[in-house]
Amino acid sequence: MRTGYGTIKCRGTRRCLRNGTETGDLWGIRVTVANPQRVEVKDMAANINDAMSLTDTDVLAAWRALEGEIVDALMQGRRVSLGNLGTLALEVGTATRKSADEELRNTEIVAKGITFRPSKNLTQQISGLAFEWDGVVKQPLADDAMSEALEGYFAQHEYITVRNYATLCRCSLSTARRHIAEMLADGRLAKSGIAKGLYKRMG
Image (cartoon, rainbow, N blue to C red; front, side, top):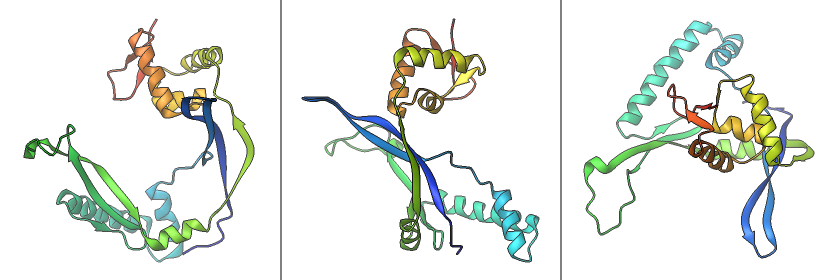
């Protein structure tokens, strides 16, 4: 396992932790990794190629075969051990909330997603990471500044997502969802019809 990763740059944003307390809103700081870069399988394959006597094609072929084995196991409801990384498991639930007194039908059980549980080894490794940030906590944009930011955004983009909105207006995802819902209700935005989660400007 590689060592000497250096420090990871982070950023902080102000967020409202609780509304309407006796002394006013309670604010806190949410810290996230600043501009995390996405690593593609092909890039990792190139790194493995440099370290071992395998070609990129060999590594990618092995990865695709492993992907297939993982998906097959999850589709059978089995837990998948990823060695020193952790385990994957199918998460299930009910389509609607059920009380203990209600009869549960098989058709009401649905797949909710996949859960990942990191191994003890991985958890110990990340606990030793070092972080730094510049101490600047951005304030959420005021209403007029939000409107101006959206004007500039739609001048260059046709669609916006909840995450786009949250980043643009320096607010939480829940706040972004609420604002988008309000704009959908009053006709300022509309669902794109192209893909779920895309919204276009109206008027």
